[in-house]
Image 1 (tube, rainbow, N blue to C red):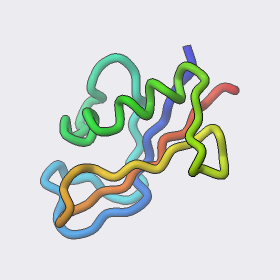
Image 2 (cartoon, one colour):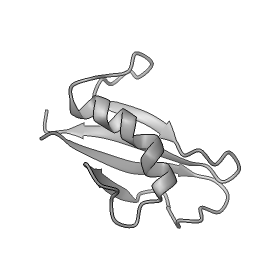
Image 3 (cartoon, rainbow, N blue to C red):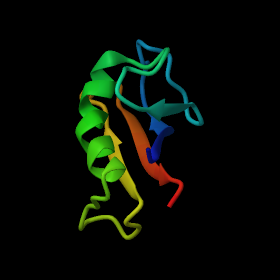
Image 4 (cartoon, helix red, strand yellow):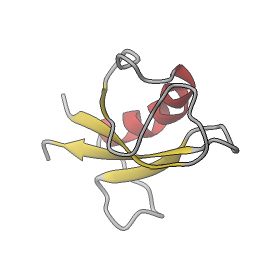
Length: 85
């Protein structure tokens, strides 16, 4: 199975889950340990697309997706990257 790594690339305000720039999580079929469930629910569809060979036309690199958590005030931005290709 293709591994998807979610890395925090930007964080503004106060993340209630304590996410910080540089944190990394492996996305699979379960919520990663210590990852905010709101972030996971937002990232999951993008991670699934990448995991099964999809890509996004707005990304210059077909092996990644940049996705923000849903909190507009204390936003955390993740880069999802397909590993193993």
